[in-house]
Length: 204
Ligand SMILES: [Zn+2]
Image 1 (cartoon, rainbow, N blue to C red):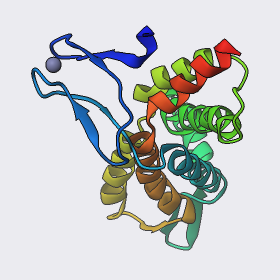
Image 2 (cartoon, rainbow, N blue to C red):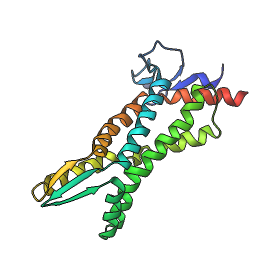
Image 3 (cartoon, protein in one colour):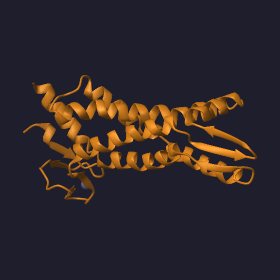
Image 4 (cartoon, rainbow, N blue to C red):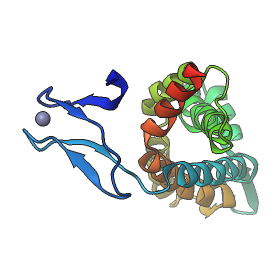
């Protein structure tokens, strides 16, 4: 009996033996009823396809115009990165940095990192330094806050709407879809598919 097949209830610390479950079901603590773990359906494939979709959307969100402002005969187009540069130029350095980190850098590192982890696993290989990379990726999660940035866009949209005509660009739509894709990818990931593989890789 190895410790790898035991799980402690996170609520009441009662130890349980991990058993394979039918897909789409959850194991509950026999004492307090808390959910111990779930057997997510096709976790690796779903997370991998959502990660690839996310990466494509992120690239579109960063290359195409985010918004176009029409005022009189003047049309000004903004991309995500020129928006960051404008914030910086207007003396809002910390806000520019925050937007850059939470809306561009962190999502990119998260998605690229997930590919680094999931693609080898898909082909039954264990990527180099898997434990370190995966732990780092999970610690990054609270830093991807695109929803907050989206809220900021909506506020400025309403405010500027009185002064100029604002035309949402392709990047804005991709950005909105990306928020849902990232949430879906986080929800479909069962961390055990990564940790279980690590135990196999180490014993080789
Ligand atoms: Zn319990």
